[in-house]
Amino acid sequence: MAATLPHSPLMRAVSAHPKKVIAIGDSLIYGYGDGEGGGWVDRLRLCWMNPEQPGPIFYNLGVRGDGVAQVARRLEREFCDRGELRHRTPDILILSVGLNDSARAGRPNGRPMTDLASFERDLAHLLDRASQLCPVFFVGMTPVNEAAMPFANILYFSRADQIRYRNVTRQLCEACQTPYLDLLEQWSQQSDSWVQNRLCADGIHPNATGYRTILKTVQSWQPLMRAIH
Image 1 (tube, helix red, strand yellow):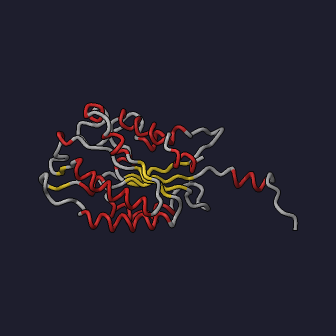
Image 2 (tube, rainbow, N blue to C red):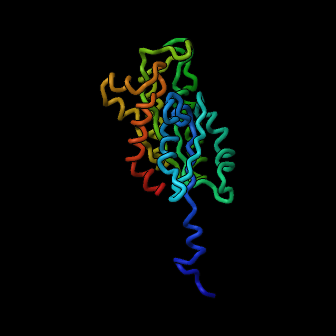
């Protein structure tokens, strides 16, 4: 039986399928705060939206307020039920979660929304499940402006807590060889005024300038770009 030639119509049809990229997580994925471009995921999607030369297909599955438990509950259902290419599962999964878990309720030293031990357990389970679906990439949180707290008159976010939850996330990603983009570290190396100019007045969500900054960083993140192209 003759072998399929590398440049046969069948092989061209298979290779012509654009990659499907699912981004799932909290408001950093959703793009809340960016009234101009809809956040870094949608900005990246628009960069490749060319009917003549179709690029990757992006699905924004961000939900405001989600923590690791909420993302874990909807991961597999949303992964398997997205896109017009339903005969193919997604090729790449981008995760971004953790900020909402780090918030404290009622006062600066109040109870965390998710205690650190539970967060570590739930995130380890989420990463394990996600890695069985397709290659996974993790985009970390951006720093908050503590002077703007409390958020929604009840939640207190702090950079100290962000660091604790970031460290757990980074360690788990390293353990399962999931590429991790440390936006918290990168932004924290800048001045306070630089960070505040990229955040909304609520001190939590990036503004349009902030999301443009994230987009530029993601576009230069070689592990993800190599996987997409």
